[in-house]
Image (tube, rainbow, N blue to C red; front, side, top):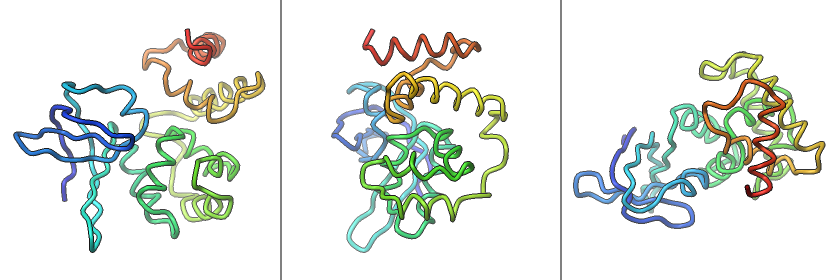
Length: 192
């Protein structure tokens, strides 16, 4: 199993990146967020998962271990393949997915392109209870704040997907105050 890769970005496509790892080029399928942030020549580290099929070997890679772990959990759901699991992680943050599962909110998951209501319900049914009250060090208050931010942005007329993308674009050292996070998210959504 190839669990981790780090190397120079030598090429990108709409869905993958090619990493030069000591002279060997590995094609790794990844999220839109990763692809939007990198350019050729950058150094990139990805936690990877190898999918072995009769006709192909495919690598899927994520910048955090929590994304990779969630990808693997999604693969365990009947009817969710690697492309669907990657699409879910490309559209929603790990926190948003886990919250949707914990709150049994299939509407959020079913808004992912290619994921219908039935599949969203399967994901919730099969993964519910598999997460504790924290997400890789995030406490319950952080989750509540995240939901408040989503609710504030959607009440202003933005879709859940737009709100999630804006929240994912916030810097890691974002202000603690929700009001300030809303202002920053609105700037991102307006293109400033």
